[in-house]
Image 1: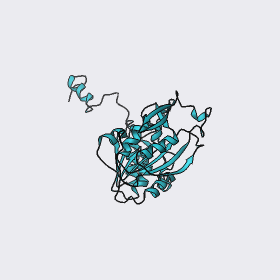
Image 2: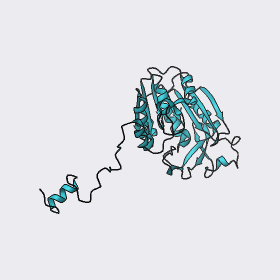
Image 3: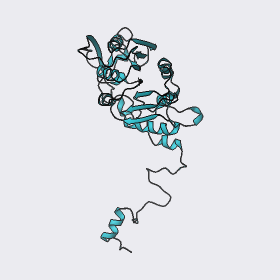
Image 4: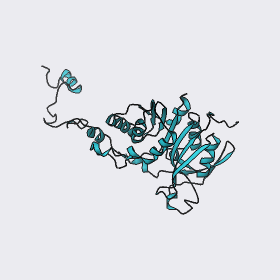
Length: 294
C-alpha cells in the first residue's frame, strides 16, 4: 500500500484514485451531479433563464410564455400552407417552442440556427422532452449560415429576430437568397406610432441612419440593450448595437427583393416595447436573389 505523503500517493490523490483524510463526509455529493430520480424537470433545472412554459399536461416548471401555442406561428403556418415534406429554416428558435409547432406539421427537415449558447442548450432539452422528429439545432451565427451554405428552403421563419440585427438589410438579403417564402415577427420604427418623446424610444442611440440600397433610401434606428444582456434569460442579439428598420422601408425592401405577396397581421403600434407586426412575404414566382446591378 502506498505510503501517505509519498510521490506515488500524491499522484493517486491527484487523479482521484486515493482519498485524502480531509475528503468530504459520506452522504454529501458534488455540485455538478443530480441525485434525485431522473426526470425532464431535472434537465430544465440544469439550465438557468428559461422564458418558455411547457404544455400544462406535462406538469413541468420552466418559464411563463406559452410559445408552444403561439398564435403568430399558427398564423404563419396558415399562410404558407401544408408543410408536410417541406424544408424549413428557423432562425432564432429561442427555446424551441415554435420549433415544436412547426415539427407538428410533418416537414422533412427543420434547420434551427441559434446563436445564444444557453438558448441552444435549452432547445436541446425541449427537443428531448417534446420528442421532435424533424428538427436539427445548430449553434452559431445565422447570417453566416445563410451566406456560406447553398441550401434552399421552402420556408424561412424568423420570429423576434430582425430587430436584433446589426445589419437588418444584409440579413433580409441573405434570407431572400435562400427562399421564396418568409415569415417575420418584428418590432419596427415608426415616427407616427412612436413619436419623439415616447418612452419606448429610450433605448435608441444617436441619429437615424439612411442606407441607400437597391434604389431605396432605408432608414435604420440604432439601439442598445442597456445592459439587459447580463440576465441569463436574455434572448436578444449577439451585439449590443442593433438597428430597427422603418416600417414603410421594410415593406418596400421586401418588395424590391421580389416578394410581391405581402400579408400583415397583428400590427401593434402600441406594443409595450415598441411597434410590432407579423409579416408573411412570398414570391408568386421563384426569382432568386436580387443584385444591386439588377
